[in-house]
View 1 (cartoon, helix red, strand yellow):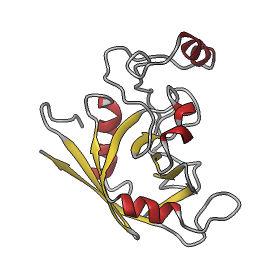
View 2 (tube, one colour):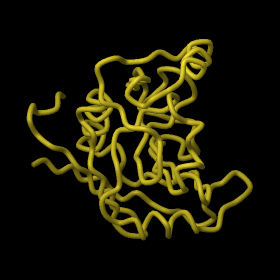
View 3 (cartoon, helix red, strand yellow):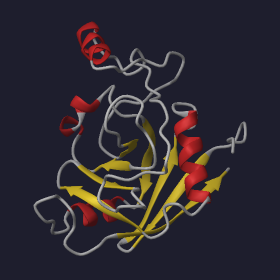
View 4 (spheres, one colour):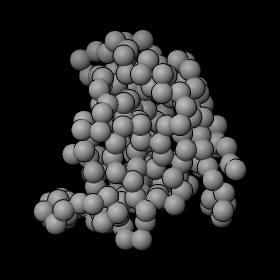
Length: 189
């Protein structure tokens, strides 16, 4: 599947707590948005859980297979982060290179901040299906710049995000009562 040229994509994440609408940043992270749209249209996210919820930080979901943060779609793909676009210093770039990360020139990448949608991963180029929404303040996630591809931003349903982040969780940050991603609907304009 390929994104349609000139179209603006958004997604409605329909959850057991309500709906969250996100604008997808197809110019900032085209392959990441393409992957998310493909998985959503293929019903991959149907009946998933928000399996990781950390108040003042993130809500995370997208692990259909294991529902605990260890699963994915059966493949991985590369990061899409232009370090210059997000203003990383020479020291930050050097540190990221030493960890195996690389910049993706030419993209209009977005910094990690409150209300963004980003890919969860376990290291360089290990993106799959898991994503998170930053529920905390900008300062809670600034250390993640350059590590996770930002590919969307919440435009409606912030009250739902806050409701999810206030859920009671166990010692592994998993909500005691399941918070279900019923489906993700893709809209184009």
